[in-house]
Image 1 (tube, rainbow, N blue to C red):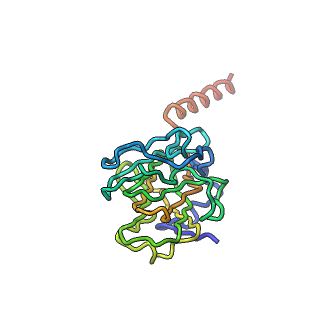
Image 2: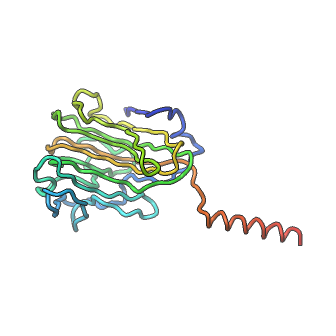
Image 3: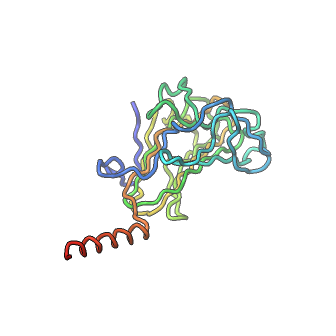
Length: 239
């Protein structure tokens, strides 16, 4: 059974049948391989890159699934992901049972600092966001945190989940898939961010079925073409 957490006055907006999908990913098209080993300097904040033969941490939008970019922040003065960790695209279901859409998801774990994920910016009208997460039941420490938010219209931030300053073990969010939902209809663009700060391989966050829904906004060029098409059609009818 899956829990649904709705932010603000979402009501039925995110699930309306009339809303189209603007961008989405279930991480199905990302490569699942060996354990990921960061080749960057763990003492410095830096972008994470895909390594040959290892599970993808980054993904370039392919026309089916939206893209996302992983990064690391040195918030603990430790070795980060350089010691090898199970992060990125995954088909391991030993903790989640099954993924909510397809056979793959995305895992953040054992960052020894902070691992983050920034998704492609999505633009549209009447937007909403739904995403599924699974927080593994573990002995989370007080300084561990999960922060999931959207940055809208280039500045304002809206939290979907923020455990900073709280004990994850006390929040009732472990050991089951949850859907986080937020109404973005007041905004025209949104960028999703996910961050996990922790230091244990048993403290895992899984993501799946990220869906931005809403109405596409035609580009000025498309509007111009529509206008020309309408004009041409009217001329043909008058001829």
